[in-house]
Length: 301
Image 1 (spheres, one colour):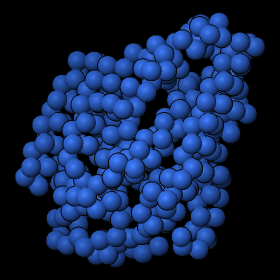
Image 2: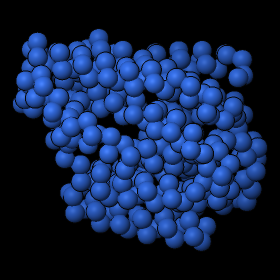
Image 3: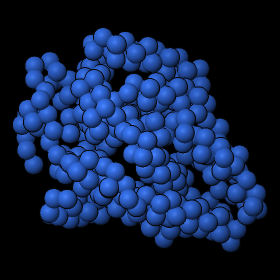
C-alpha cells in the first residue's frame, strides 16, 4: 500500500493546504467507517483514492446531520449545511477542510453538481423526516430521493464527468441491495431509535405488529417475516451482478469486496433469525480482514 503522501501525488493533488484537506477527510472516514477506508487504501488505484475518500466523508457528514437532533434541529442543520456546500462548490473554498476537499474532488473529477443537490434535498425530506414506509413503493421512493444520490456523490467520483445513464442505473441496483441489507442488519438499533424500516404492509401481510418487533418476539410469524425480507435482500444482491463491468478498473477490487461484505452480513442476518431483533448484526472482525486479505492477493482486474 503506497503512503498517503504518495497517493496524493499520484492523484495530482498539490499544495500544502489542499493535501491537508484531503488528509482531514480521510481521517474522518477512518474514524467512522474503518472497513471501507481500508478497502479504498488497500485495493483502489491510488489516483482514485483521495477523491473517493473525500466523497465518502461528505456522504457521512450529510448522513450525520440528517440523523442528529429533533426534526427542527435536523432541518436547520441541513439548511445551513446546504448553504455551505453550495458556496464551496461555487467558489472552491470553504472554512471547512472537508468541504474544501470535496469541492475540489467534484470539480477535478467533473461530477455533475445535480447529484449533490439531489442528495441534500433528499436528506432534508426523505431522511430527516423519515417515519417509516407504508409499502414497497415508499421504500423505492426513498432510494430515489436519498440513498441513490447518496451513493453517487461518493462512487460517482470514479468517473471523469460523472456516471452515464447505464452506470447510474447499475448503482441504483447496488444501493437497493445495500439498503435492504443495512436495514436488516440494523433492525435492533433502528427500532430502539423509533425507526421501523420494514414496510408496514409486509408486517400486515405476515400478521406481525410493530410491538412484536420492538419486543423481539420469537414467533413463527416474526421468523417468516424476517425470512421473507432476507429473500428480498438476497434477490436484490443477486441483481447487482454486472456492477463490476460498470465500475472503473481501478475501483473494481473495492466494489467486489463491498459486495462480498454485504453478502457476508446478509448471511449473518439469515442465520440470526429473530435474534436480529435483539442485537445489530455487524461484520465482525475476522471476516472483513479475511475478505480484505483475499482481495489484496487477487491479481489486478
